[in-house]
Image (cartoon, rainbow, N blue to C red; front, side, top):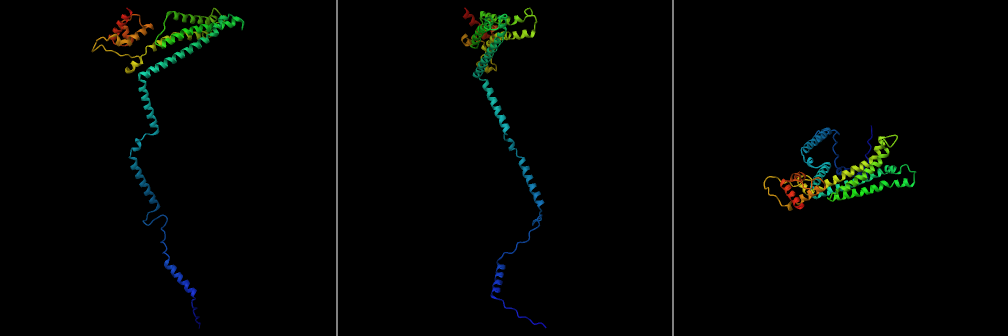
Length: 321
């Protein structure tokens, strides 16, 4: 037979602790519901479904944007650069058709050709100096008076030749070709002496062992000098005939106004064809036309109308009379 123990009476601290627990239980929010599994949500969609849905939406947006051709209308840096060069080339072409530009180009080219020809002529004459010295020394001992003075033979001939050629070249650039027969004979005299003195010691009858290569090497300078002296006046005469200010409108540097033989055939006064008269006088001075050219030769040389050619012929005949 058990004896029931009496229940202890709660103390005031136990009562306060119980009340605090009840108060805390009433004030705290309820706990959140348990989270769904990592591969699903409330609607039943897994992460794979969401990823595929995003991929489809992205593809639709890209397909819609790819139908827009606006980006294709923009110039790329390479296209912009090429367009800039094409525009510059077109403007340079138009500038090249300007009469003043044509005149400047012709003058620059003429100066360049004359300078190059004079440099080549000087080098060619300098090349032949050794050959002329060998000819003039005639086996004199080195540093003897004859040997030293032999070096002066070619320079004084070359300087005299360059005086004549330089004068003809300068006057040719000014539209006044100098074709005096005496000057031409002087040029050929100097060139012939230079060529002869360079070639004589190496000719078959002047040497025991003839060598063609050595002969060609020593006559190379005089031959180049002869070629330059012959070609330079012809080139300058051609430049003197240029008329860029009148040829630009007709697509050619040397083109002149062509007067057709149809329509009004009234012969213009000589004052109206004064430029053609000047051109014919230049051609006569250059020896390309006779002193009293016919109208047919004038028409062929100037590529003008027959009426203008007759007017020029009559004006020249009047001046000669």
